[in-house]
Every structure is written in structure tokens, then in C-alpha cells.
Image (tube, rainbow, N blue to C red; front, top):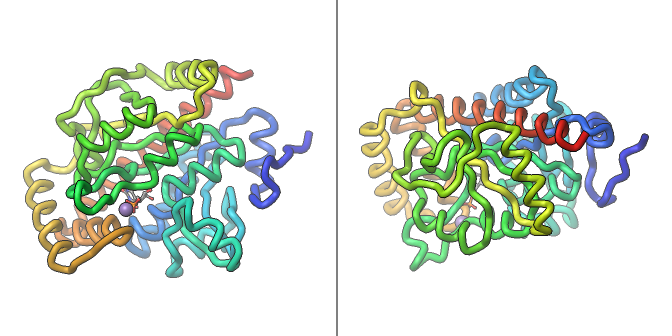
Length: 309
Ligand code: PSU
Ligand code: MN
């Protein structure tokens, strides 16, 4: 059976299309974390490793990016090299038409990745951390399009919460306003990316992947089309030392302020600064939590296919 593309402008790798048509598990992966979230050359190793983790668990990886103007689902080695080794734009949903018309490449954020994944019919997506409401947003209005996109995009996103550089309370409030379900994975404590505990609790948790799949099914039954945030904390023994975390973060904010960084440059600046100032420790934690999210996303995609079979 041939998998029919819903959107002819999206290039879906044959392996991904086949898996979707045969109800085999597929997990979407974003490319901004590779191009702007992790330093070279670790980013390239990470991109390959993330895909390998899925394959080792019988799940087809679909790394998403815009390559020469074409939204691409499932990258070949040249596509992976484009996002890992070259300076390309950080692309959110609003950047897609311009990149497409100009035939340029872009690394997709959570928002743009979720949008393209949904167009391709992929239901599960793994990332490190979701974008959210930035501190000081009451003046800067800086709120990630990840949130508004999840309000209209039916994809389950597995993340380790949102980075503690954001305003976590405000982010959770916005997710509530946008009617995006937030489910803790085996926990009712919302994680803070490098740390297990943001200090905020959740109304709901799911015990395992099968329960997440059941929630996805029920969500479809309600007729609602939002995404679902699956909040998956990093294991305790892998988290960053909280005191060290607090110290490095305050330094990073001062540095961003001094450098006058604004808009979409803020997240990459802070992440880069934090990696340096932590002597690489934050990077190891970032990689561990991403691996962990990818494993869980693979389990959810597998449970989802089983439920639909
Ligand atoms: N979280 C990370 N690393 C990242 C990002 C988030 O740990 O690289 C990226 C994601 O692609 C997310 C984006 O969608 O940052 C949010 O950016 P902004 O705040 O400009 O919307
Ligand atoms: Mn922003």
C-alpha cells in the first residue's frame, strides 16, 4: 500500500512513509536542538545517536527540517549534515513560507517541527525542552510560538518540561489557557529541564506509555485538536546539581542583559552561555534528558500503534 501524502509540498522519506502506512511506530525529532541548541561537533553525534536510540527500539526516526525550501520528514545524511554543520536559520512556523519560496534551509523549532509532523500524519514527537513564556514577558511579550502552535497541532510532545531560564509558572498558565493537556510521565511534578522538580505540580500524570496512548485516543474522541505535552523528568541521578544550576543561571541572565540579546536569539544565547559557564556539565544533562525523552516517545509511539491495530 502506498502512503498518500496529505500535503504534496512535504517530502516524507520512504522509510517514514512506509512505517506510517503500515501502522509502525514513528517519532518526529526537531532540528533546532541540533543546529542552535547543542555545540558542534557534539550536535552531529547527538543527531545520529537520537535516531539510533529509536531504531534500536524498533521505532522509525523522522528528523524534521526544511532542506533547500522543502519541509523534509526523515533526513538523509546530507540533510543531517546541513542542520548539524552549516549555519542555517532557526525556523518557527512563520518562517516556513519564506524559506520555501526562497528555497533555503532551516532548522525547525518545536513549533515548526510539530506543524510539519502533523501534516505528515506523525503523532509523537520528542524534544529536550519546550519553548515557553520568557521571564520579563510582561514587558517584552516574548512567548514562544511553541505554545500557540501546540494549541492547534495534534501531536504529543515529550519534553523535560521547559528550561528553567523561562517563566515556568506563566508557561503553565498559558498552556492551561490554550487548553493544551499537560500530563506528567510517572509524576505529578512538572520538571524544569536540567532539574527534576520545577516546584510546580500538575493535575494529571500517566503511569506509562499505554496510558498516554489511551489519553491520546480519548483526546481524539473529544474532537479537540490541540497537542499534548508529556512532561518527562530526567532521572534523579542524572540531574544537574541544583545549587550549581542556580549559580550558573543567574550569571547567564546578567550576561544576556549586558549583551542586549533579544527575541529568538535569547534561547540559543542562554544555552550557549550556560554550557560554557558550567564547564560542559549542562550539556551532558541536556543530552541525557533528550535521550530519555526519545526513549519514552518511542514507547508511546509503539503503544499508540498497538492501540490502533
Ligand atoms: N530547548 C532546548 N534547546 C533548544 C530549544 C529548546 O533545550 O534548542 C529550541 C526548541 O527548538 C524550541 C525553541 O522550540 O528553542 C524555542 O525558541 P523560542 O523561545 O525562540 O521560541
Ligand atoms: Mn521568542
